[in-house]
Length: 541
Image 1 (cartoon, rainbow, N blue to C red):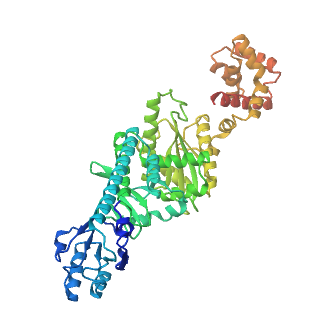
Image 2: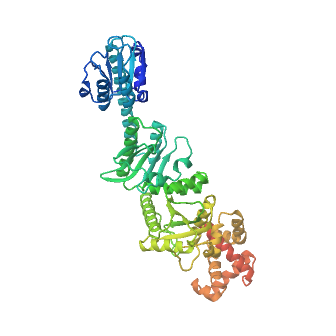
Image 3: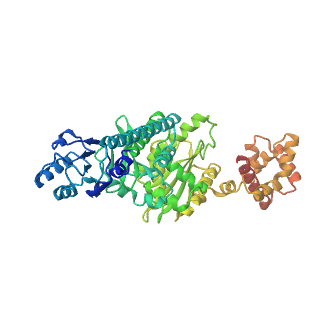
């Protein structure tokens, strides 16, 4: 970073001249690019801007208009300061020169003691060169760090964290719809940073690829590659940033763009953000207020809305049950495809929702419904859109109850998952989506399968029979299940078991003896039927 006029005046070589600022103090913070010594009145044409001019004034014009024109010419080319050594021409600087310097914002300095100008130029130029070397070292460090992040395939969160460490300023990654994909707050709160983000962002329209917007205090650069931009990186500042900040932001944007190109089959940043919020809700990783802020910045308002959790369980169907196990790569591809289809279905159905993969076999959705939107219609629209593009093949869709606050979002998502798990155990005709009333007794028992009391009940009712089968290699439990599923009709049960009636009847009598029950008793049959359903649920977990 170049030294300012103030920093130059504090150098020992300059202080030996007893400097005093007499005009243009508003320009003291301007950077000094070079120091030039001149006694020529038309020196302005030899300069490029950013210079501090040293002179004794011996060649300056006598008349006020000439002095004003001389100072004006310097200002026109961008000279930041004029230092005049007193004693050879002036004992005090002319009022016309002072007035012109104040008017044009050029720092005017009196040097009250004689000092070799060469000492001043050497000191300032050494400071400038040292500053430029430091800037080069810092730039090299920036390039090295972000190159390493590119090679390692760092996530967007890691890249933004590095930007935050290098600038100590909040940084936000947004898509082209001005929805927040990731951010770092620099130690502040997210509420203030993301409040009304979309509207604020839309008002910042840089005319170049990277630009600083003085009105907002934002340094903005585009993110993308090969002519396809997909987002913007915003550094939220208050003052004009130093050049190093621009280097940091542009290298961060390049790293993000490169990582997306290299990992084409990785889910999009938007999908990642949805997934992060959904898993954060389920794991209590973030406070409810932060979830609401981040979701709103992503274009999914959750406050003062009716929320419905939806879960898509992959690799099973309500009719056929679990599919064959998939390899890791196949499972990842299936989940990615299902997530993409789900996101497209949400958009096609014109719904507002978070949607993303929440584990290897599950896509989670948190529908955010307005006052006039009905949950049944929304679920119908979602599943119809999924069905149109093949997104329901081998999938069970479970939906949770409606909740009205972010704090209850976890409950509706968990319930949706439990319903989806139970749905493929219910039997009967498959449905497009299921809720708790649809899973009936078998589904209810499946939801309770981890409860020790249910496991104890099943063991108490069927334990002796299970032990007998294990010891003798028989299948009396299967015979009992066939008998009960046929409503106690012995003839129908025998036919379904492919056994003669006497042989099947003998098995029933043996079951009665082992369990000490009467299979003609409605209550005994009901109790045993519930125990069998419970056992089936426990075994399937």
